[in-house]
Length: 199
Image (cartoon, rainbow, N blue to C red; front, side):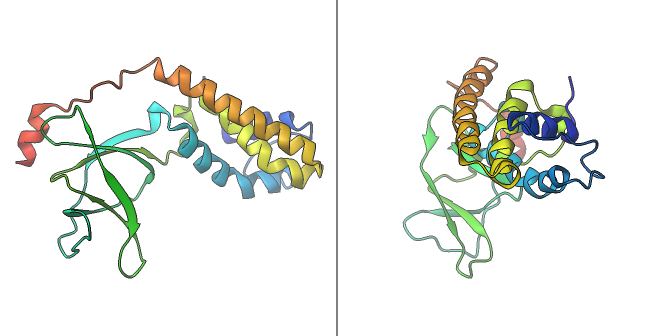
């Protein structure tokens, strides 16, 4: 089942017991206006907290040749759509994750990743706006996070906010366990032809 922004917002609004909306883009009621303001932040935070498999991406990092990192051998560009860096693996043997840190560049205009691994491959959670790829577990977690953010503006009740916050934490834990059953993470492999193509 594919979910829409309107459906996700209405699930969140039902959690806090307020009026639902007719359409995400056109509804001008107070719930509609608040949903448009808070939706993206709640989505991004849920993706960061949950790190669902549908939002996982693996890619070679771009080396920053003009940067001389302190304490590490290499500096790489932080991927544009990365919400949360998960692991770096060696390019030839992906059995052991490599240490890394995230920091700002010298002029604070962007972030970079420092590590000792050459040709580093990063596994990260990326930003996905297309609701058609969201699974039910993620939608449930997302709806509780959005409900948490909507609770005070729409109900003025701290108890409702706290209830949504607790349910969000519980749902993240349950959703993470469900998501883990659909993949194996004990060993990451990338096809040799991709490694060869880079050499």
